[in-house]
Image 1: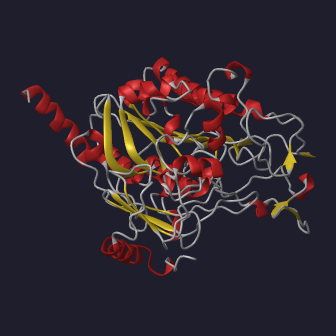
Image 2: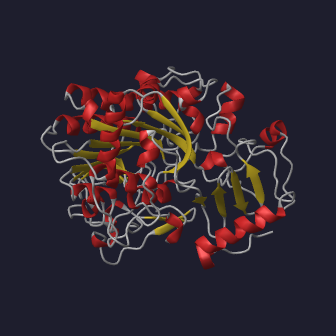
Image 3: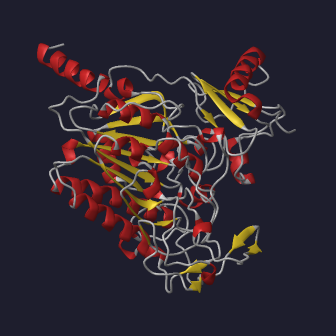
Length: 502
């Protein structure tokens, strides 16, 4: 190794070990978090992809692509909780925050925004929140929701929309919030910080068609003429505007959780027909364009090389992905088994791209095991922030792996979407402590095509190095390994572990 290269490497590692030096500016941090974006939807990760993703491919070329990265869960709220808290969601809950549910983040624990704001960062969340608000604070006394398809449905007049809503992003470290909370949940309206500038005054009515799949929209209050197709363009424009309003004198943190390509699948006319994978494919192209718009904004400000950009997804693709294979030959899950909600790899193994010129190696593919929960401790190391006791207890500093100077230091990952159902990763092995890793319904034609037989064991065991597609269940053939992994699982989750149902 040349002396100059060795000196540069020492400088970089030293910067991570103790945070950046006093003379070095703290990096801006931008997290771009797609919604239901599959492992195989990333063009550079799927040679047979029918969807162009040039801006994401650029991120991969100019940074590091992680091929064994995981969200905390196969559904969205738990993954967002784990990302922002550096804490496994299963320690507190399993499912999603439903419409008009209370906040799920923990006031006594730091969020990533609070950590970075403590280092002087300007902070903003723009996009999908889906972590709850204190709706009771603005709910009118005596109102009673009706129940429709198992969901509580409120009327527009049940809330005093003129009041501030506590419990949202501003109460968890963000200086600014703009978004629509959840794209397919009420209220269908824009949030500006902790208020709704335009009050929902009607019940949602939908008469148009989506580009693919169903609307997936729950009934409830909406502003008149709410336009689902305008959501991603408006969010992208606000993210760009916020970046352009920042000063090079102060570092910033932008958390931009997209509403795409989650249902309703509603690409704008500009992107219709831009893929060979139907409406969803077009929506992924639009998602990729939003990434490009953010990169362009950073470039115009001269901040692109001073910004650590992270792209990932909250979980695997929605159930429409099966029919997409049959109609278009595009596999949103890539080589993986399973989709959103599943314990199989396709439910929680997600794209992860990291770009930070001069720090994170360009054009590198990293196969080490990483979790989105690790972003908390890793970013704390980057900026030299201490993590107080009681916060981010499941986050591990992966800065050596990020820099390409050391292997991944995480040896296990646990995922679940319902009580008592866990998948434990140890090295190349994964134990699914349930009769099946499937939650989303698998079409009969797809199971036949894969050659899947019903599982006659109480669990599943796979060696992912040899069997990434999870075709060969080794549960019966490896009883000692199963017992060891189950004991490890008991040690980790304690009394949360229940015997799997037959």
